[in-house]
Length: 435
Ligand SMILES: N[C@@H](CC(=O)c1ccccc1NC=O)C(=O)O
Image (cartoon, rainbow, N blue to C red):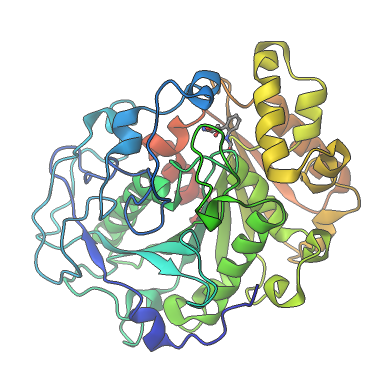
């Protein structure tokens, strides 16, 4: 795979249109959740020709997601309205999926009076590989907060672009067991909405630019899913190291383009992931030679993130399959199935690629001298046991040299991204350097 080095700011800004993310007067939030997932949700980033069958084996084994949340197509993602870039005042919209908001209390129940300005903008479906190489899932989405309460969407060429305001970029990698076509980059939309809300509130309250520069959510090629066959979709036939190669290609794209305004992301960003997205986030800081990639796709253009945040992460697949905790033993075959689809059948190979079990001293392969890991897990997670973060924590403690924080969250496995509020609060804490 070639890396993307032909991108000029103009190329990037031409990649799509900005969509406004408005306030909602109802919960002090905007309608972020409906259609946050699902092939094609929010952009062209999903896969094709597939629909969630609520009785499929993965749904049966893993509980599935609510069809309402996973199959409602939304072309525009979080709270955005139809149409393209809008510099016009946005009318706040109600959340279109009330269930998505029921159990996560927003930090503020009353929106500050920001007038008609949106709280931010979204550009989705941005290809991170050149057109000759890019498959359907080689895209990412970018949200930028409205730092100065204007109605002008960001222009990467403009010196007054919000990206100028500094702050930390958050880059997010979605989960879905390396294969679920209904969990895409757009699954970050609920958390992104809350984060933009935090940023707008911060700006309204203090007049100071928020600590958040922007958000990026990455798609990557998926492995085949027996319940959602897509034999003709080349972006659904991935096998390790394709997933991590794509993540590294996306990061390298971010380092080259001006999205990040001459490089704010280059020095100040954090990498977060949910479930197998957490596995990928940790793999992204391990030495790329471990993945035996071609040199161009493994070239690090971005300096490494200052922090990793893993939500409900998978850190030791071989350990789980060898000895699952009693309450999760019924998932053993399902784990074996998706792990084999993603990494092949060799269990020693699983050990070598998982961050809690990989040989060598990978923490030292992650260069910053001051680096942090935040491990977030819920005891109510019906798919991933708590002992995954125990294994990860033990491994990090063994190697040392990294500041580890364990955060207990609540809710089931996919609630973390479906609801998004707690995920956003934790990420806000990290960008504010409170966590
Ligand atoms: N919905 C997924 C299952 C899934 O996402 C999953 C199941 C068990 C443990 C972790 C999971 N996801 C991690 O990314 C599937 O259909 O395969």
